[in-house]
Structures are given as structure tokens and as C-alpha cells.
Length: 250
Image (cartoon, rainbow, N blue to C red; front, side, top):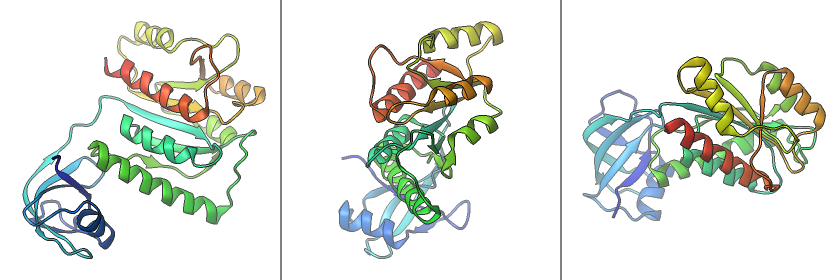
């Protein structure tokens, strides 16, 4: 059986014991049925892990006894996903899969064709929910790094403000979009290395509008094709992130 995992933010860098929050204690003891003596890997979402023994299995206040600590090696690349908000619960699925793939930042976007509009209160609640989804995914897949989930942002404003990336990509259904492999090959030929900090935008149902695509090209984004078929936005996001992470890891 794999070790149990629990999220924590210890008050000191080198703790001998870790007291879990009520929510994490309940999940560990009541949901996952961990017992005293079981091994628990506590992690802070920033690469630090503590290999522990469950000393006290209190459902509202579990206590872990630290055996040793370790620092996870980060991925050799950083991917930011700018995702136009889809309908229904598709964003939950996108956040979950992006966390499993190892995305560093997820920025939810409101585009011209976005059918989901969030006021400030709903936006805050949604972000809180997506953070919970990311945490659950990180526990399940063993990812010690939690993605940062940014505030809901207008797609056009995000495109215009996006700086500091080696490559800026946008999934496109329009003619003339290039393959990811050709764009990466061109970057390697020009720079002598693979990109390490990449931004990828994925549109909503119906894709980004022609005006948004024009704005993205003016901002230095490279239109990338995801093949001849029209993909659902959650499929497009997982596909795009998967092939990009595979190419960058190679």
C-alpha cells in the first residue's frame, strides 16, 4: 500500500512533530483510515516533504512524528496554463489534470466567448475550490509542488501583460497554426537549448475569437495546432500540456 500523504505548513523549517489541521486530520484518519504507526508523507506544496509516523490518530488533530525530511527536485521546466473558463465542472477537471502533469501556474481567463461570468464573491469561491482540487490531485499523484492559481483575468489584458516567458503559445483552430514540434525545434536552433518557461493559452467552447487571436499574435504568441479534430476545451488543455511537458522533458 502506498504511503499516506497530508498537506501541512509547519511553523518551523525543521520540525520534530507536525500537527495537522482539522481538515487534513479528518481526511487522513476518517477518510483514508490511517492508523497509528502508519507512514505519512507530509508536504507543503513548495517541494519540502517530511517522512513521518502517525503518532496520534485524532480525527480533529492528528499528530505526526517526523523521521526525516527531504527536498523534492523541481521539474526542469515551468509551464503556465492560461485557461479560458469552460462551462460546468470542466475547470475542476482541467485543474486536476494540470496538477498531475506538473503545471506551475494556472490562470483562469474570461474571454469574449466565455459563457461563465463570475463576480468577485463567486470568483473567490471558485479559486478556493480549485485550490482544493489541486491539493487533492497532488496528494493522489505524489506531486510535492502545488500549482499557483491566479485570479480570474480578462484574456485580452492577460495577453497584453504576459512577459518573461521563453515561449508564448496559443492553441488555435485557424489555418496556418504550426505544430508544437516545429516551434520547439526552431527555438532550440535559435537559442541552443530548450525553453524552460512556457506559457500556453487554451480557449473556451468555440475557441478564442479572431480579434483575440490577432491580439495574441501582436503580443508574440505562436498559434499551435492540436491536430485536425475539434477538441473539447478540457481535452485540448490536457493534450496541450501533456505533449508540451513530454517535449520539454526529453
